[in-house]
Amino acid sequence: MKLHQIVGPRAPEETTDPWRYWLPSILLGTAAILLVISMFLPYWTMTLEAPQYPRGLSVQVYVNEMTGDVWEIDGLNHYIGMRPLEEAAQLERAVSVAAITMISLLLAGAIFIHTKWAALLALPALLFPFVFLADMYFWMRHFGQNLDPTAPLSGAIQPFTPPIWGVGVVGQFRTVAAFEPGLYLAFLSSALILVGLYTHRRAYKPLVDG
Image (cartoon, rainbow, N blue to C red; front, side, top):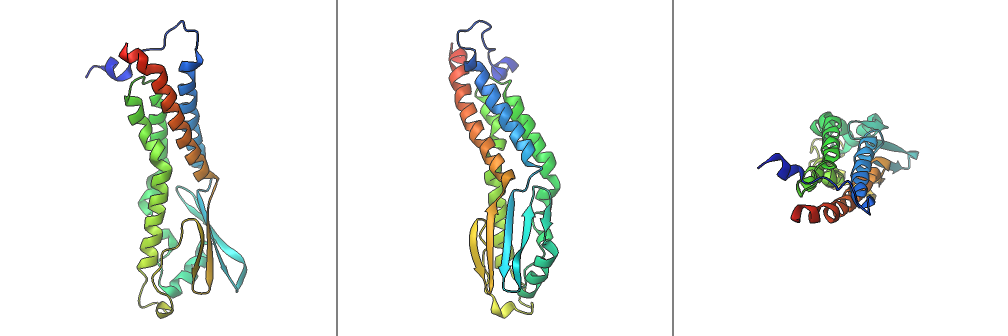
């Protein structure tokens, strides 16, 4: 396949509607920037509420680290047989910054591709927040369903799956999980990508077909 068949036609230099060709680039470029910014913000938070912790214990999850009351929550989880939080998604956190940077660059590269191949370059960024949530659910379920039977309170707690959003109850504890600004930016990026691909097709498909 020749390069020009992938790159596609250029926008006409003279047009009565320049925004027709500028808008896809603006939308896709903005989506790439938002995805990069999201790396520096928390994606998810969970607050553990219990009588002995009136203010609750909270953990904030970024794409590459966890902050907050991680040590204290791990101490409580130890009694019910749940593994330390830091053991979850170690590979994902290790590669996340490089991976998001790469998919953001691919998305930016889609600006210069004026054929259907632009959608292929944009696809990883489009799916990223959904993959993040699926991975989060996998680890929460894996940890909750595989409790250590030798833990001090193992007999008092049945295997469970903590919710990734909303309220959950485990024994005397109440968990409140919520999405944070980083994840919202990633979802906004996906929305802009969808609109960007639509306007991209509307602008360049007639040129490809012509």
